[in-house]
Length: 358
Image 1 (cartoon, rainbow, N blue to C red):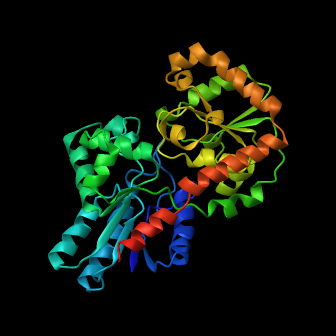
Image 2 (image 1 turned 120 degrees about the vertical axis):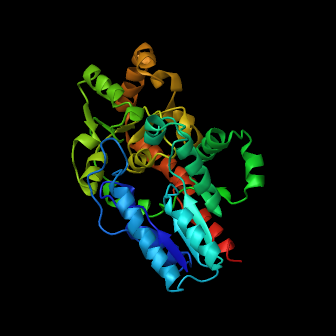
């Protein structure tokens, strides 16, 4: 049995989609599973963050109580697998504690999203490299039999910042359970299909959180410079997920100036619906997307650098809007589908779990 220790399902985040689709996809892959949820959650996230910093600990604590009761009742058996959809979950230490002291031979996998090892992440900016957080992340890493990453960029940053190891290949020899698998989001094509036929307008969308590392101020300055287009900051619209997709499907460009990104779900969503994905040539974007969608990284490395290169960014946006037609729409979707086959597909994740049982 696989016990799916999920991430709290916030309606405006992909976590609510995982709550619905991930158990179904695991079952379709031949993996019997039971969800370990943490009850109801506060939908109001901490401003600029991915979740609510207090609410997430309530959710995780409720999950731990359920897991402890399963161990107490001797319901956890040899060969069972615990999959943490967010590896940054201290309860994995207590799960390992119970399993090893009770002599139950389980396997545990964790999916890493972010942490203090990323200087642009909330934890990196507010906590930094304090010993408690770095040692906690290291301990959680060593608790997992499988440490899953969506991109090589993220894995490389993790091992360099947390362990000082530069050679990813060598690190995989030391810890063979450290794997790049993409995320299990193959449901996205079906989910977005109803929005793919929308007529495009001269709209440009900023799909990211309102956090310093996302640099929304660059987007807003571009909007003032080019008022002939409609510029949309998604998080200022307060839309439901369906309304958000409807709005995104009308856009010709999905724009990013991110200083932090380990995958890039929102850009992928926009491209799947035919919006041209315009991103800096850095972070996970550099690994995942072809050159034609990437502008030089230095153009938005900082506000000062942006001002120096602003005219070039203005020019490329105008060229994309003016040239937007059927072929460009097709290319955006086709490119997104190719990216999705590798990075938004759970096949490698499911295989690792299945192989661990043989």
